[in-house]
Image (cartoon, rainbow, N blue to C red):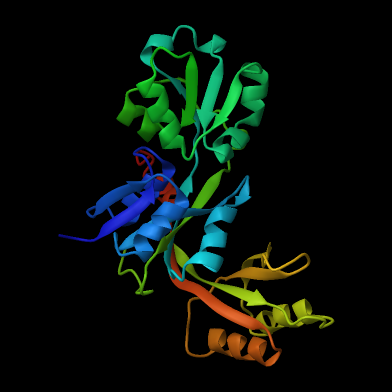
Length: 295
């Protein structure tokens, strides 16, 4: 038997799309929450886990970051970016009356991404948050007697046999989500996919207390080595007000000189440094540009 892969389920989520992109032939196991995915990997129930890390519109998925930092030491071994296309769908029995539905269900990020559509077209419909877009679509499928709609993707509509009544209801066209692939041992993924777009190293940095200019010196350690930072974000340490750490994405894979040199320099400044992963990045957007039929 091949590897098994945990993903945020149920079937039909964007996370399943990300998992199937990198692991098309492995067993895919849906979990109901992001923490459950990561717990399953940590406990040896699966070999990999695929979880959302960041959305271009709504920002970082804090639950994923917090679990990576505070709960489990699960190295990031890969990343796949998926274009997010949100559709409004209903049970077949409610197709003719969808404009009068009383409730819209989806993941909080999906509902936020469709704010303008919901405000203008369905202003009186209640918004109900679910663990995933897939779970919202499944709920609508299981409750045909309810005047309820779900926001989700085309894959979910097909899997649960719902009718898409409005396509592409998201507010912004340039909407993507980064999903990371986690592994207990940090072994790199051997994948020669044409979806390859680059390499990245993600690290967590804590600053020394009462040190004027510490962040400037941290950034200088990357700058003079000409290492590009694609992201820097602060998150609370959960040890008290004013205590933060920084998550930094470097557009460079771990090597023998540059990244170790950064780590040594930061540690010499009395900074705490933890490498969360050094990995290859893939993008479904590239696939859509070269092969428009791929969804």
